[in-house]
Length: 187
Figure 1: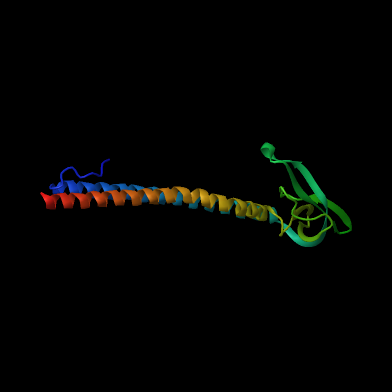
Figure 2: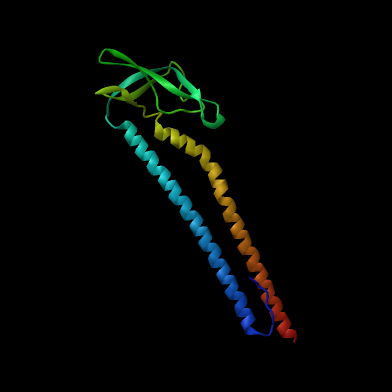
């Protein structure tokens, strides 16, 4: 695609230059729109997954009980990410003591051992718990907050590059048109 004006005296050359510029700008704007649309769709899908996971985790939990974090379960994370931790809750319900490992595994423990927290349990199955302060949703939100800043930088780089290219192309075309006009006045 050429943005040069072949014949300064030929009005079709100027028109061709502007048509090429307009086509180029439209393509870039569409590319930016597609990129933003895909990113928005992905973020929307992540939000739905988080919402569904929290709803599934909290379903049937109808009784609030105090619990003590007795320790943290440990395991190796995926692909060499190191040790990850999940809180182990100890609580009493109807005279029986339960110890249940939470569902959220994190690089750093969310709670300290000995800390008291309020959790929700399923009265028909007290081993099914929901911690309003540390659940799949809060774990994903914490992960999302950490990743969101990196993602925003990742997303802005192509947009900045596209805008810079558009500016350079517009400047080049305008200079060529101005040069063509000057040449036509000299002839």
